[in-house]
Image (cartoon, rainbow, N blue to C red; front, top):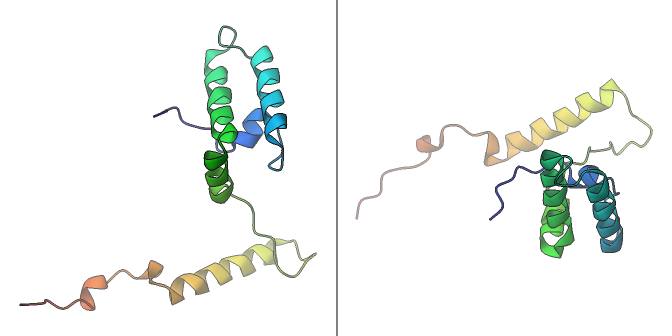
Length: 115
């Protein structure tokens, strides 16, 4: 298993868009290897190689796309200012309060079971 830490965004590491085809990813990888080969810049080459391995495998690319951070755009369209960030934080706080994610006292609800 590869233990090399990956860039936070393998697409940015290779310089391709998230909707790039596998052929585009391959071309970008070979172009990056020409500029930062293992002899020229070993650390950067390892990052580039790890990003390529992550994006070249369809299963790993799917997982990357699912876990990749994408900023949440507000539902109100052009409302892009500080108030939008506050509104988004309020929505997330409300969702957390309605779920079990924010509970800290699980033992209060659990009773000892004796058989």
